[in-house]
View 1: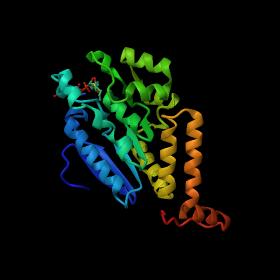
View 2: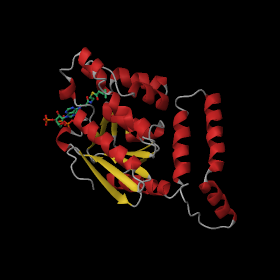
View 3: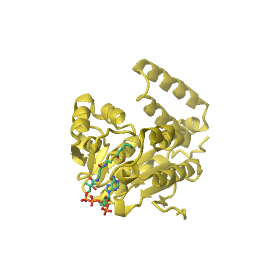
View 4: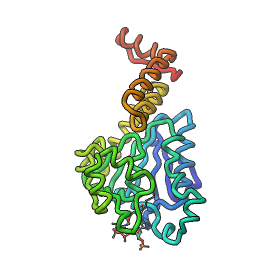
Length: 262
Ligand code: HXC
């Protein structure tokens, strides 16, 4: 574990798996600027560590994160928010981190907490997880991509209802609507599953994993024809990797692939 963080914990629960745990329990992991700064530092360190292949991002059983820190935001003026690009650094992980991030969500994932979970590559949650974009109740709107990512995930009809009413949705609904890949009955099962999935990913070629993450995320930005073309270009490029030769040779020889990650 890396020492020196105040609002997060960093660990390596299994070889190749990095875990970041949001740890500001008194404020239900409200995402203050110092917390986000630590989170970005930790994620960038895990991303550049050759030992780490996949990352689990979680909170506590009670709260993944109850949103941006309302007490910090309350006095902000327009010009302060605008000139400091308030919230822009939150989405750094979507561009700076090339390794898969699995969000493991238990308890509250509200406002910025929901938006942070939506930025992850895979989202797992508990059945009782409490998701929502309640910003409307505070006289504002989602500001870290919620209106865009939630709408892409659940479609306009549901996103509009959720964002205009501020109503929560459960982990079961998150799974049914395709926001979460899976939901689990308990916090322990959730964490086991998230770490196991990260371990599975860590067992594959780092080159192929990074490419797979890249092309799936492109689908959220590109029209279909461009996305399919982009995928094919990246697919072609992987014939230049050792791991493609290793993987296909191992299949033919009925052996386990020993990746060189080149
Ligand atoms: C600052 C927060 C907080 C938040 C909770 N706390 N959420 N502090 N910012 N977002 C603090 C409370 O003030 C309280 O501190 C302590 O955490 C425990 O919270 P309680 O409310 O006492 O707990 P509980 O009754 O269990 O209710 C849980 C809750 C509620 C339903 C999650 O705390 C809540 O509604 N929180 C706000 C959720 C929200 O509106 N999120 C969106 C924020 S706006 P004290 O000191 O009193 O013990 C947002 C904008 C995103 O995220 C746009 C840009 C990213």
